[in-house]
Length: 422
Image (tube, rainbow, N blue to C red):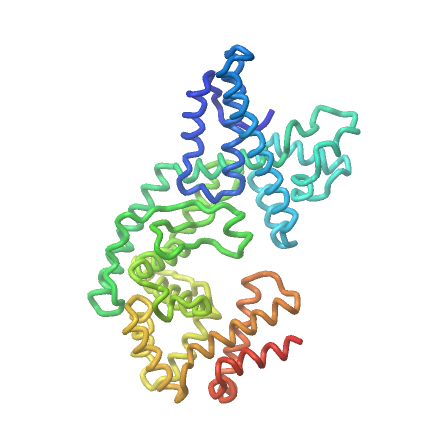
């Protein structure tokens, strides 16, 4: 039997209501297989309801059209998911194996182990993408896959996410953490360290990001500018208490960082200025993490680690410490990050004056973007590895001999990297 939650209402209407309860289509809309699971459950609900309808009636014909449409939608979703798994990199496949090993329920683990022991598959990703007909020639039917293994995994995966997203204790702790964060951020505003009072946290929501959108993309959390959601990666483990504990451990390092993004960036028209440029991602993340570390310490974290985005922060420090007033430059950078276009232009001009060059930030951005393109052409695939290597290259260039980079135009910088990649 496919994986289902623990109740099975008898009527179509009741079952649809239960589906909406289990899969509320809130923060889970981007979860792997979410829509497919919904289509499959609605299809099963229609089939159940049709058993009590007279065959050949108008209502039966109408429901049959609905059933076929839902079946087709679910089948398309399963095929799309299969193709997505086939496109995974080796590191993403390894992450999927680790996730399944850590969290899969016994019935899925048994089915997978049977497929491995009979020599049909060698990995979770292979098990989820081979046709069910592959197992037709096996004699033992006890542990053979029933239905579609990929659908079963998507159903389990979405239910696991829902448990974490709807846990009242997790959400209560988020509200408490958000209140503590707001106090520190407001204090930073009144001291002049940031340009925007962080009053936009009142409606902030916590979303649980699934492994496909976080770990497989080299992220532990994310925030989309303009939204009111901060996302942190799901917890893993065999029991909900284990998964919950792992998720809560991310509050200090990850949630603080994403709340800095939300509380400051939501006030900006990012497309109008420096921080809106995709190639300024490094500067945005460096300033966000530096602010995050300050807030964590102010919130009472005595043994604060040295944070993330180290390469981005090293480049920022090199940029600011070149000034004769590095503390003032760092403060200007944070205000530029949280302020309007005028704050950003003041920071850009200050950096140019400090390095006695024009368009320093733009040239750094151009060099980073060109180096990343070069690394991809050379065969690198992991985004974080590409970003890190490009940042180190530009950092070393600025530290050792910045003259050639800073005297060149943006076009000349891009051209030089293009030639190097050939």
